[in-house]
Image (cartoon, rainbow, N blue to C red; front, side):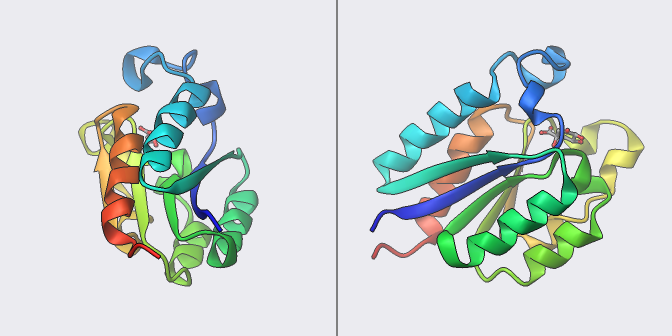
Length: 147
Ligand code: DQA
């Protein structure tokens, strides 16, 4: 059975390509999905892309990953800076998780320096644009033992 990487994207990331392109780039979430999926295929994984604007739906996706995935890529977007619920869901997930941000939140507004996700993930990639998702797949490929 193909091993699944669950790639979970939070609020407003459905607008990538149109939303503040000077910060987030011109690639759409679909473009990013294709890049990340190609990389995943190279390593023998099936990448499943998800996006939700709802905090609860993201918690549900993380809970589902407990049984249907071998690794997670998470861009929690604005919930990174607010969500205890996503923090708790990550704490109960015994899988490698790579946090990705297109921009570098630490170099932006002060409120983006609060991060509820970073302390409970395996590693973080920020500020590298869409390439961050490809690098996250590469990172998971090194972290997940081959079956
Ligand atoms: C983001 C950074 C967050 O601060 C912001 O709220 C987002 C996107 C990023 O990918 O750079 O929506 O996660």
